[in-house]
Image (tube, rainbow, N blue to C red; front, side):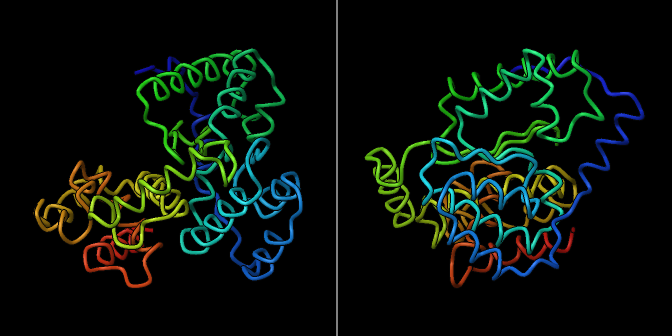
Length: 278
């Protein structure tokens, strides 16, 4: 795995900590934002909504079907009203390829990229080059390991975290085939109840971001809480995939909590425990 060879000064570290503490402004009326999302006619308009309401630092929906982009923003709107501090961890929203190209530009010393994700007070050109090159290498490893699906979360320490999506259109055959697999996996219990849509995949990836933000599955308290469930209970009461690791258990629980009209016991308990950590 690529390793970032870059250290922040105390001042830069303080600026990063302030960046991580940002929160979504819940005074904005959710219904109004939802109407704007539905009425947006272009990718640029959807990007402007994300920027105006500070869903993230940078949204790039070029090459992404507007139907998919709308779904992404609706999911983010729903999540940010429940976890407003997630906004501090969400830096880039867009396609896999555009994200890699963005980091490549940063690695070439393009300071406009630095400004677009609000890092101009932390990065000079030399740091931007180091960070961008590291990001490109990390992306290559993830792509080569075939870790990408309909959506993915790439953690970059809160500096340029990416919530990423396939750039294909909503009617693309590969997209429809992937949805068919997701629906089958939900039916056989590999994924949680209600997690049978593109949105549920996005909720799962956001679940990883929330887990990281709360430092839940990584902590002694979180590990002890999750240890109350046996592997058999998790497989039966949440999903078989949730048994893969504590991180996947948390992400699957959050996905079910958001996706299912009636989340089950384990999903509800994990979701409520994480909410109490906020």
